[in-house]
Length: 272
Picture: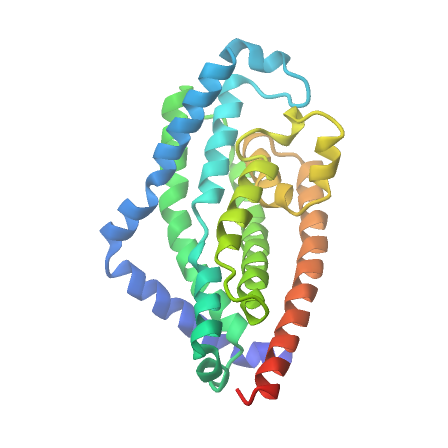
């Protein structure tokens, strides 16, 4: 912890540098991340074609009104488009190209430096996706179905979601030490989060035993819980999000640490 505290300014510098580089082309970045509006529109059309708005209240598993459902779907799209999916590819590229050896010689931890870079992208993406999602949900639902408490809980959950997503990306990226290409994991992880995270269909609407099985994965913590906290915040839901996130951060963090140590050992054995 002391070492991390002493090196923290280095990672903050990486964060600021990355943020400054991306804001140089601010409009290009905004236009590239505004797709949250398009995907929300597609999701809205699917739901409107599937069920009558007045029937949502009677659906078992969730206590959503049609307006709350729209806000939930918008929150899911905000979460989905506020992360840097290229992080895994960048780790994979560093491994395959050998750039990781050069980075390891620098006076900071490779993964922490990569996390600082990812968070700069995530913060900026969130700054675009969040207001865009709020506006389209407001227009589509005709109501402002969220509160200050909901927004605060959502943002807190988003921090844990970002860390969990990076850990999954680190696992997939470091897998390049053992498999030739791990690019496919980018799409697999994204699809798993969207489907089993409840981004397209709230988990409460899933039938048993599938809902119970999904709850045993980290994906609901990454999308369902944060999105529901925005729409229907409660102390019980917030606590559930916290302990589930903590468990998965410890588990996935342990896997990343183990893979990273084994990867460094492989580099040493091969003279890297």
